[in-house]
Image (cartoon, rainbow, N blue to C red; front, side, top):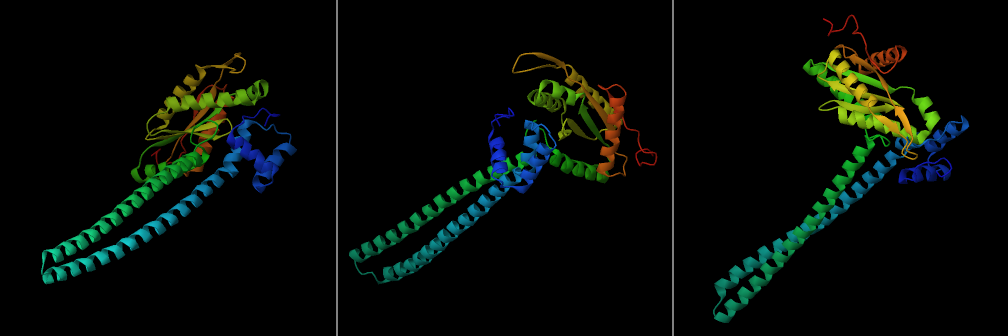
Length: 330
């Protein structure tokens, strides 16, 4: 970590501990391949490896804890309920005895003894109910805490560790969901595929930490610019996507240019040295669902438009033409 100037985060320590201790074959293989091919082990690559192979381990730990807690809670509550049933049954029997004794009582002293017995049994019943209530409150608190932990893990599993944007897994799930909505409700659906211009040379010149800073800047711009039902995501490497429900091709082009202009307006600065690094630009391809194609085909068309934008000079948005036989085209 120190040699490669990697951030000393818990995930980074976990990754390298797992690697050197040979605890996960997938992690070992992934890192060995990079080392064998003389690929720089950047923070970005380490985070991606951790996300791919170790994040699920955390989820499994939470699921295991959840199972153990639910089992313990059920056993505790079951035991308490059994105890309350016994106490209730005893109490009912005591009340029957009290009723019988009241009919046979012949003096004030007899009545006082019967009332004292009734009060003792009632107090025992009240105490049992208080115990049950306390245990149920404890169980409710524990389950609430578990629910929050599971939700945190769920969000982390769907979030890119470096940029904080939804990750590829979340993007794929949302694409499937939005395709179903668009098909069922016959709505427009468009996609933007974006790539940072000259990112590799920028990364090689200034170092991976500055490269990570560039990725975070673009991600933050996407987060601030994209609103409503639109979903920005990190697709992989320096490539980003935005899913645009209820949006036609012209609307996608407008959104793409708004993002492109917002990114280009920000001047980069090396946080370590204060050196001004100039401005970053992005190129984008916009595609609209044709009413028939699968998600992969729309991604492919938007990606082709992105490369057209690159070939036409970068820092621009190009639109993918609609397939000639598409439902949307009439």
